[in-house]
Image (cartoon, rainbow, N blue to C red; front, side, top):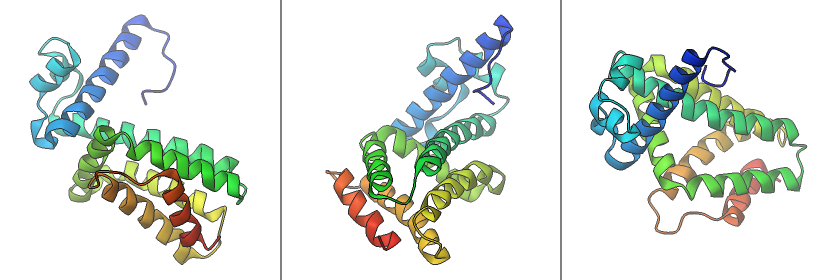
Length: 187
């Protein structure tokens, strides 16, 4: 969607604006929650004319869908890359644990993702992106185990630990993530 190369200058500018609006939406969601999102607040946050968000996104639902899709697809792509490189060894597990620690260290972005994740729980049509994220986690887990219960447990564990990381003054470290992953995968 937003990652394809565009050669037409007007289209490229439009896609840049959409990306700026999506990033502004994520900042607002992180700061104020989904209820703080309006066309006007998003345009102002992005430093664009008041009409920009309404021009690029017909409604708030479309804007939130674009933000959710962007977040989940970005995370799923990072997981796909990790899964493709994973060989079931210590180094792959360590890299994944480090990635999780980096994610939880950016609480604003993570908070926005979970706000949008919950929106997908209420809106089934938004679940395509969250499904891609969970599938990428499952693909990674399958590099370490063929046990479907352990695969499902790892997917739930990652979301749970990241969400709990938002509630703690000191989020989990890479070492803690690695210990949890190792236990869940039976490594």
